[in-house]
Length: 141
Length: 147
Image 1 (cartoon, rainbow over the protein chains, first blue to last red):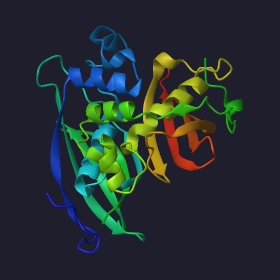
Image 2 (image 1 turned 60 degrees about the vertical axis):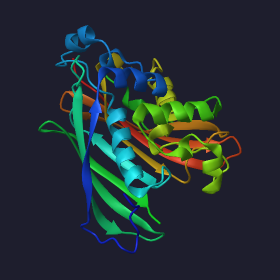
Image 3 (image 1 turned 45 degrees about the horizontal axis):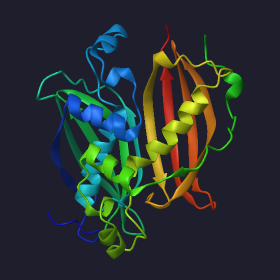
Image 4 (image 1 turned 90 degrees about the vertical axis):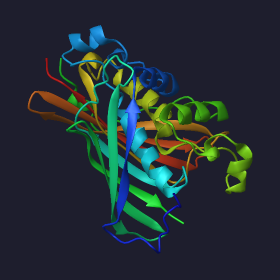
């Protein structure tokens, strides 16, 4: 997909949704890469003992996937200059080969100066919103 | 034990310097599936105008969460970490982090609020190079669930 151009975009433009698969393997890998070894992200026994339905993904992994959704759209890993989210529900990751599916979508909400646009992002796992108040500023060509 | 509200407004000492490496950026990019060669290939990054490979936007958490964890472990603050979940996170970048950066993080507790049976702890962490160049401001809200 060609990178979007600032001049060609208008507020209201939708960014095509993408699905990301998250398995236990991805959680272990993200734990190592990020340094977040909280046991609720890899140990089902402890996750359930603190009232969670199962092992859950790192909120920061979900945010990172949403960040990747935006950088892939813009075609530049440096494009996301501002990004904030609220972790509204956990992504529950069962111990099977499929794991969880996270669907991410976005809509351009405004054009800013310096070739930047504001974007609202949504992220769902099943019927559950896993990120809310997810807003980014993305610099385009 | 509740979180000590006297810590609101407190700024903590800067972290030890953290050196951003090409290997760590590539490892993080692999872990989140970021496909860009600018995160892995120095020549590609330089062709795009950067001195070295650049990090994805949420990579800063590697630096900032270590600093927040240090702050949260202050015994006087009284956080029960087993009951803590991540509520909110944001990043505002002056420029992307890149390989070769040597950065320090400095955190301030912006607010401590009691909401029903939960306490929220909001922090702001400034990431600067050891030469004082601002790279990123990260804000984090941790939520301590009531027992």
